[in-house]
Each structure stands twice: as structure tokens, then as C-alpha cells.
Image (cartoon, rainbow, N blue to C red):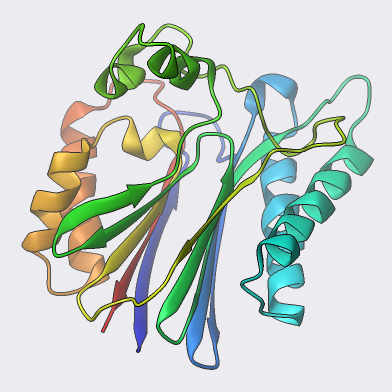
Length: 239
């Protein structure tokens, strides 16, 4: 199995970009990470860079799909963000990670930066946000589609930089990848403007990851208003 990727990140309508992303090629695989710093705490750009640096260092040193190893990487990133916090700057970050090796993959995340897996042109897996609005879905108060417009959509219940013995990062293993499968990692500033059905429609029109991102970004461009959030995405094709 071969993996091809394309990335995009920008400040959007904000003064600076608090998202960080990275993609690394591995022997027989690929590692991709997207992180979104929480600006209301200050230092979001620093927190997201720490998240990407720590998670990538952990995974590149020992590429391992075991749940314990992956969650240990998130614990390491959490401690690194905590170490940079001050009373005046309680920086935090979300993160989503994709590790592909041969015909298997792992998606792990914390917060509301999402990971999607597409097979046969359809979403077959997506991460569950660690947010107040996601809790409202689980309690039957709103539908999943209403998360994008919920008044508490930006309020998170889990993030890197948290003082807790149980961080709560989530792990999902995907075996038996097929040629034509695709993955998307994206910050909330991206998925807020692109519905899952639209991700599928644009994927089915695309011959390469860059084509897919371009079509989705056209949708974002038509919908954003002034002052909109940073937005980042990583698209991966399995061939």
C-alpha cells in the first residue's frame, strides 16, 4: 500500500494561525498530525506546535500501533504543554493523529480536531468530538449535524494541557485498508464549513489528495465570513 498526501493551513480571518500540521513518510507508511491551539487561553500557536512536535517525535522513534503506545504519546504531549503553561497563559491544544503502516491504520485524537476514514467514497469512521456540543448529541438534545451551529460548539471537555490523571485521548484501529481508501484530518475551522456528504461528493470527483482539498476549500471560501477561525486539513489517499 502506498500513501499520498496534501496539506493546507491558514490563519483564516484571524491575526495569526494557531493551528499546526505535519506529515512524515515512513517505511511502508505515513504519519500525519493536525493540532489546533486554544486561543482563548493564550499561546495557542505554541501549544499546537508542541503537540505536533511531541506526538511526531514519539511516533517516529517507535512506529507502533498498540493502543498503549499511542496513548503514551498523547500523555507525553500533554505533559509538554503543561510544562509551558503559566498563570497568565494556560495554553492548550487539540490534536488528531493518523498512523498508516502497510495495510493498517490508527486514528487517535483529543478535542474537536477530527479524523475521518473514507472507503468506497463514503465516511466509514469519524472521531467523536470532546466538546459540550457533542455531549448534547449523546444526550439527545441536538443532532450531529447541529453541532456546527450549537452555541457551545467551541467549549471543549478534553484537550492537551490538562491537569488530569486520565487524559481521555481516544484510539481507533483500522485494519485491511483498501486501495481507494482516504483519510482527512481537519481542525474545526475547516469541518465547520464542509458537511460530511460534501466531503464524500468532492472525494468522488478527485484523482489526487490536492484535488480533494481544493474542492472542499472552494466550499469554505464561499461560506466564511470575516473573523472566521484558522483552518487546516490533511488529505491522504491509499493506493
